[in-house]
Image 1 (cartoon, rainbow, N blue to C red):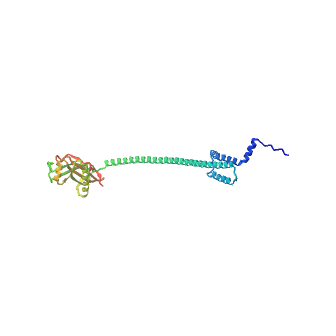
Image 2 (image 1 turned 30 degrees about the vertical axis):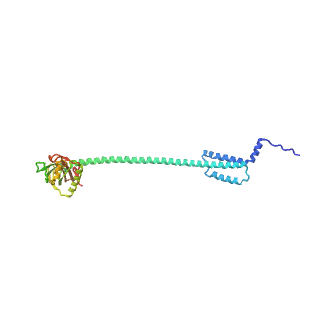
Image 3 (image 1 turned 180 degrees about the vertical axis):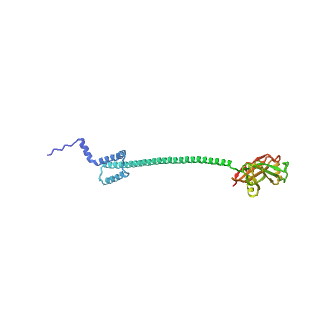
Length: 318
């Protein structure tokens, strides 16, 4: 008769037996721990699994778990732990991929910002160069313009020219400034040639108006009327005007009405006289305008005021 076998009670023997029975559950637990910590280790090494690897492994593990018959409770717990670890790994992998993508986009954005700043700096430099060039060009042109003006002024000063200007106006045929209805005044318009050349083809004329003293709006109105009248009416021929001569021409005013005389006596209106002469010299065709009004025609025909408009001395004819 065989003696009875002695039971091994050593702890390692029992752990090895337990491990053989639950090896699948142990492997699943081990894979779960690896799956949980592997993404962190790879991230520190600068690597990561492509998105979807953990989902693929999860699918394979689910298929194997479905084919395995009669799993123990430890195996079930291992499968659940492994699937959970794969899910966590995939989620962490998605966050890592998103972080890497955000970092790449941030680097691209920073690079674009740096490029934009460089381009802006280059554009600013170009604009500054253009502005400095334009400023230098303007300074040069201004100097050229001043030089030309000085040259033209010197030429004008040395070249003979004619220049007609009004000397004075007097009233002839009247000893008293008293006006009566239907009176007409004769006005002698005296002018001088203050230039050093002959004024030829002289045309001259004058026209009088009645209106408020020193009224700019009225002066503007009669100035426009005078311009229209000048362009549509024949004028007096002044012939030739030499330097030093004191020629004059005469005009007769319109017949003053009772209302005009009353306004003049009441000092609400006065008499305006507008003159113009057109002439030529060796430098071209010139025009001169003058506008003035009497301060008080009921007192004298001497004191006069210049108009604020229509006083244009020697300008080139259009």
